[in-house]
Image (cartoon, rainbow, N blue to C red; front, side, top):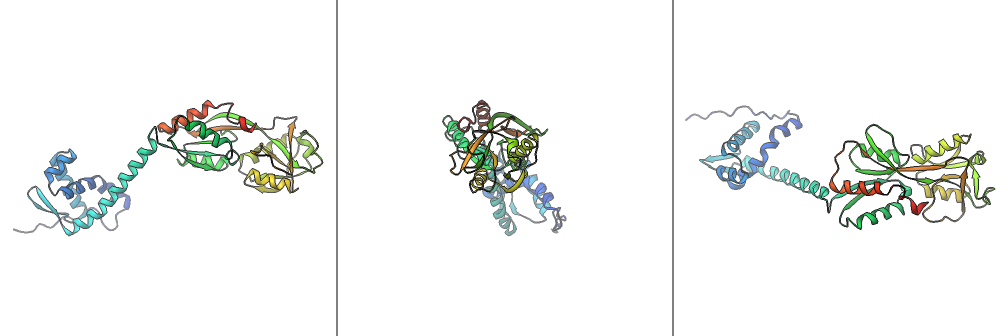
Length: 319
């Protein structure tokens, strides 16, 4: 009996990795099932597929690889050395897929799933902990992945699918996002406690036109609001220092290095006086945003509805 040479493999050393995965992946579970039982009929019964479908899949897999994975004796099969080598890697790969499936199912579980939630640095000390405590009173086992960042960075992570929801300011207006205004926060002119305006309770922003300002870096929502309010008041702020965190700016003000437009602090800061700004609407709006058309898991839906129910009450402790 003459040995028939095996056809040239469809997967070569030069094949694109994506082509290899597309070609081989659907058959790997079939291969592992037959390797486990060493019997085509029993494997087909366990996997609830026709035996003919399973047999054809194995033949195609061997043809595509260009190697014999099984030695056949009727319906009974045994792994060749190449088959044993291949099985070790296939089991690892299938194990990773199974763990990934378990992970995403767990994240979508209504009771114990996960929400990836972003928010502004200034909301991290009081507002967000209070929100999470209130939400978990009714959803005690929902898990959170929390990200603090400035607005534009969080919107980028929304678009990348890394966040489900974020609290940001200003409220974005973009065709690929859905955003809802939840609350607004009064901004105050913060000055050193020995400043010429420190004895005042109220001040027009134009009165600080000649002052050095400490601000957040360009790209931060509060920086944009500061620039816009100063422009509305008739001047361009002379920026002496730029930072990434509001409380750091308060420290710079306390050190006499400038003045700043900031939301109220979680805890009063010594060395500064916070003045009400009059003559214009000095506020920042806070909203929740998510990616338009992005399907929500049950825990994300529940938390989104909770946030929307807090409209007008989100920042009560920071008013």
